Length: 76
Image (cartoon, rainbow, N blue to C red; front, top):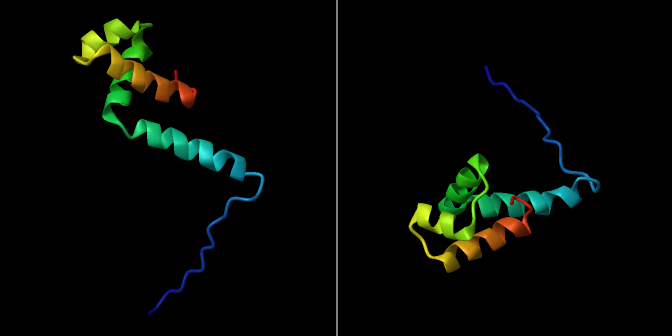
């Protein structure tokens, strides 16, 4: 017996398009393990760049770069 299912997936309408790219940008930013670690630290308490760098064993410059990307997507 063969079952044929015709499940049409809802396609984003024009009203939804304004959300698609911002969501894709957020997922792109969240795809980096370092940025996830930074968000995890900041979820517990406010921290300065130096403290984050020390906690993750990274340079001040590297953390600043990652924070800039997180800020661009309003995640911090």
